[in-house]
Image (cartoon, rainbow, N blue to C red; front, side, top):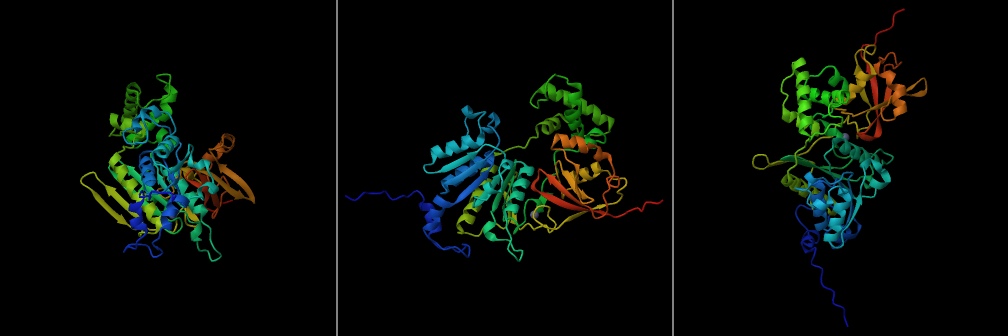
Length: 443
Ligand SMILES: [Zn+2]
């Protein structure tokens, strides 16, 4: 007796695209049933973030024939997530987002295998990221975006002529949303503009240098940060940690920040701003997430199958007032911190008055660097010397005294190369100091 196998109609809608030619297919595209096989059985994708975008992305991929999906997220589910992160239920509060999302999809979509990773992206090294055909990120953190960007750039190998070996390139599709605005972009590390190439697209960082907060506030935000970072611990008004949801705490911060704002003639401080700064609120709108995730998922599909030209390379979406969208080709920055091999030069006007702290503040505040807590080393008289490093307590204590020393006092000279490590990149950055007004010491 012949066994009757029901014809699997599940992916019929994909077959129409993958098994026929079309006017917009990529040059390399050859319609065949093998492409669906590839999606189902071979293609491995990584979704970074299992939040608002991540839930949408996982659902989209599972319904689009991708069966080998990994998802990485370090967060746990909170009550406020439930209005849009639809893979989670009330009973899941407190559980891992990655694990809960994976379990939901695996149960719901037969044959789909989502592997969760309940950890930080920084917990994995090259060997983990190298295994994926495409990576898609739905992150709300610029630091994490820059880190994964740097990681994917470091995966690229070059041939003897210095050209990137395309088989080592792992494409990244990056989606981002903020309220009613969103964007999606396709990044082919080293070939197309990367996250750091277009760093100036991101709003200025929300953390402020401590010295500004402590000594020279200019913005109402500086006054709020002052109460949060310095005054709260000093006065300890409620004998507990500051809670951005507690109205009494908010009132205290508002009052003290107002006092400080008055002292420095700063206007514009409101209770709402206090709430915003303390809770670092990024508003989330589920419809924006759905649109951006859909765009990202189609780009992944196009890249994985070659069935259609993929986005080149940046798409903007805005539904504040009607719907507005456009795409453009962002350009590579030839001096990009992450993807260019060019050594960056920092011009220093007066090395005998510029302190190491000034230099670090520059690296944190300059729009082209936007570093977070850089650690600096250099070579002096043929020896490696750590100038400052905040990430290891014992080294921080040993090197703290250098912060107030001038670059001259630290024996740094014109042309000195500094090696900088920072959370924004898994690799070190090299910058060269150029002293423009190098005063000759007089004897
Ligand atoms: Zn770049």
